[in-house]
Structure formats: structure tokens, C-alpha cells
Amino acid sequence: MSELFTPYIQAGFAGLCFVLVGVICWLMRQVIDVLRATSQVIERNTSAIDRLNTSTHRVERAVNEMRDELLKRPCIASEKDA
Image (cartoon, rainbow, N blue to C red; front, side):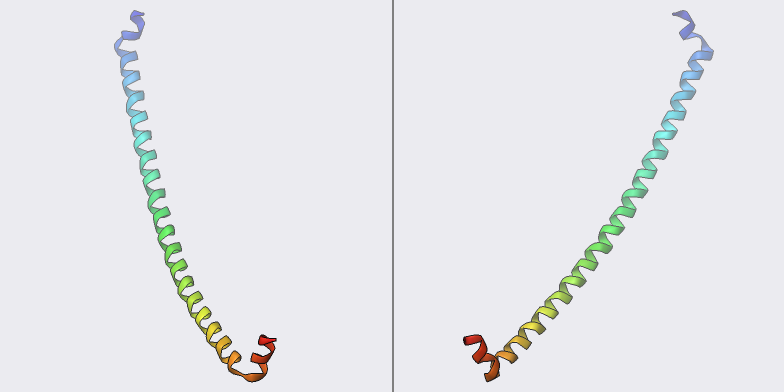
């Protein structure tokens, strides 16, 4: 048991601890970089969905206007009523 407390072994454990702390810090930086990239992707996807939503509303409005115009015509209105 006294071999564990020799200065060389203690220095080895301390060095290993510093290496592990360095690895943990490096991994945390990598995780933070991935989270930043993910946030940017989510932001871009959200803006794309908003643009698509706006476009869909415009198309829906145009289709409804066209439907109303077509239903004003007597030949089509009579077919719908039948």
C-alpha cells in the first residue's frame, strides 16, 4: 500500500488527472460547437417553415378566389347544385 504513495506514482496520477480534465474541456467545447451549429440549423428551418406557411396561405387564398369566381358562372353553379 505504501507504493501508492510514492512521489512518482502521485505525480503520474496528478498528470493523468490534468490530461483527463483537458480531455473533458475539449469535449465540452466540441459539444458547445455542435449546439451552436444545431441552433443555426433550427433557426434556418424555422424561417423556411415560416416562408412556406406564408406561401401556402397565398395559394389557399388564390384557390378560394378562383373557386368563388367559378361558382359565379351559371353553367358551373348549376352542376354544383345538382
